[in-house]
Length: 160
Image 1 (cartoon, rainbow, N blue to C red):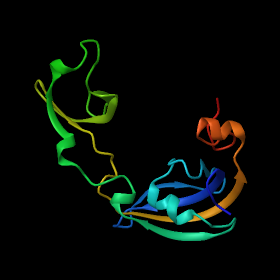
Image 2 (cartoon, one colour):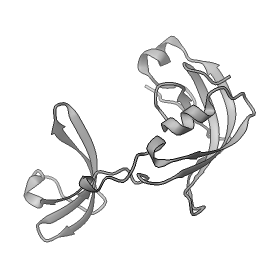
Image 3 (cartoon, one colour):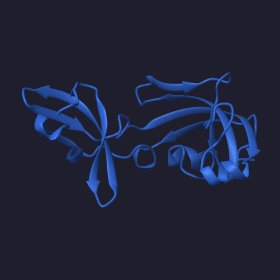
């Protein structure tokens, strides 16, 4: 049964509200994650709690339990001079900015007009309702090392 501190393997298809497929993991290469540590979006993790191997489930995750709402204040216009001189700034480039107080935010360059650079710190799926179709393929107790590291190891998991 899926519970905290178990390593879970799932196959899934993720679609948006328009039915467009956004992501998937098949049975041949399932997603492996450590349950209960926030490795997957909260709404999906809650919905999987208590399921057994072989269970299938359709899960609808609202933005608040997925990648959050779209935050207009994270769309920012900045100047090219704000970037290190040795960095070639391009559309689609992703970077992490230090916001101070130990806080960091991921941003993506959306547009460049002259010396103005338009960046967005929203997750690409922010504001989206997520539609998952999942099948539980495996469940096992996490190893002590996985618990210490906070993620699954081995096939489909993280390798050191």
